[in-house]
Amino acid sequence: MNDFIRFQFKRSNYYSVEVVGKSIGLLAMFLGTEIRKRVDTSFTDWLDESNIQGIQGNQAIIDLLDNGIIEIRDILDDGDFDDPVFLMPKEEYRKMVLQWQEIVKQRPKEIIVTWDGKEISVEGRS
Image 1 (cartoon, rainbow, N blue to C red):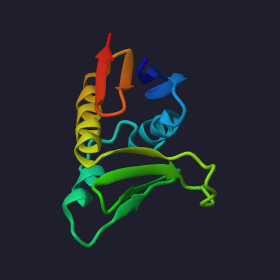
Image 2 (cartoon, one colour):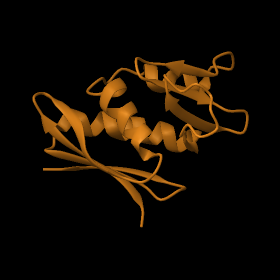
Image 3 (tube, rainbow, N blue to C red):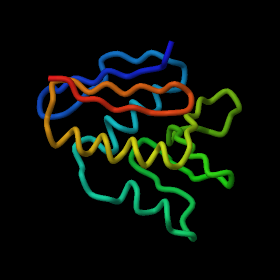
Image 4 (cartoon, rainbow, N blue to C red):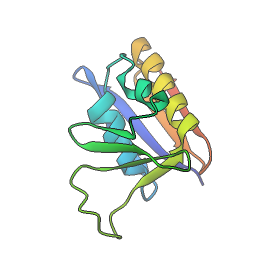
């Protein structure tokens, strides 16, 4: 079974209402609190800058590791080996952000984010 997050539109924003999967909750936090309804390019522009290794939001840290993998973790992560991280390929991260931003413009009632361990999918449902 794939990991997934189900977001619902409530009071002018998307909130995660169902999260299935161990570390995908970090992705729910990132999309729901950092990107939200923003459509600017700040969440993807840094991926192609050779001198920038990541970005930090209010609740999430997003790093580009040397092997081309994106690591998303809670800003309060103290580096303990038990702290969860969400890992995904750089191009899947870019695809996810761009799909999320495009779907948010359409304001569907729900957004479903699915992760099969290799590929991410973002789908709006009215």
